[in-house]
Each structure stands twice: as C-alpha cells, then as structure tokens.
Length: 145
Image (cartoon, rainbow, N blue to C red; front, side):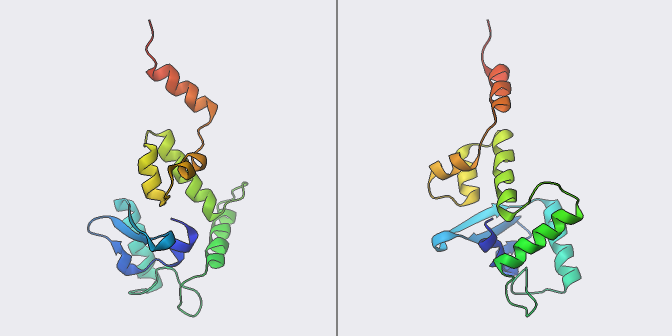
C-alpha cells in the first residue's frame, strides 16, 4: 500500500474472513490486497490493544486518520528499535515487497495489480532484478545440451 492509502485505511476495509483489504488508491480506484492468517492475527491484536473498534485503523492524537508524516515517523521509530542501519521509509517497504514478489516468481502483471499501478512501465521500474538473480534464473531454466 502507498502511505496515503494506509493512512486512509478503515476497519471496514478489512475482510478478516476472506483475507482481503480493500484499498482506495490514486484516482479513487479500488483494488483488493490479500493478507495472511498471521497478518490477520497481528491486526486483530493491534486493534484489541489499541481499543479501536471502528473508523480509521491508524489514528493520530485526536482520533482522526494518522497523517502520512505520522506513519513515516512510526516506521522510522520501528526501524530504530530494530537497530536497522539502512534508512527505512514507507516506500522502502513497498519497493521491497514488490522486489521479493518478483524474485520469488510472481509475474509483473500481478505485482502491478497489487501495487495499484495503472501502467506496467511503472511496475518494471519499481521492481529491479539484480544481475545475480538473472544469472541464477538463466542457469536454472535455460536448457543445456
């Protein structure tokens, strides 16, 4: 999800039974993003501990949707607690998600849908594959005599 999409996420957008989050993206386009049973447990735990029962999932101090800046600060705080040396931003997480999908065999069209890109060219730029992975794929799948 884009940070602005995460900021606007409401509890009513989460379907725990089916494992989907309805995301309203750029241009008010709607897409559905799957999540795992483990993620469902983590979201439910967060909602239970925070006492949030309806409305926005992530809230600022006054109960309104957490701002994009607030989400950035939250991610930076978590990265610091995890003692990560690299700078982590919401976009870093989004890019890493797309790269991992591609490296583990997901097709570009599926990644495009998950990320909410209207143009496949955006997805191709977004998901770089390093030379090592290309060489590994070539040696694994290219027919040999």
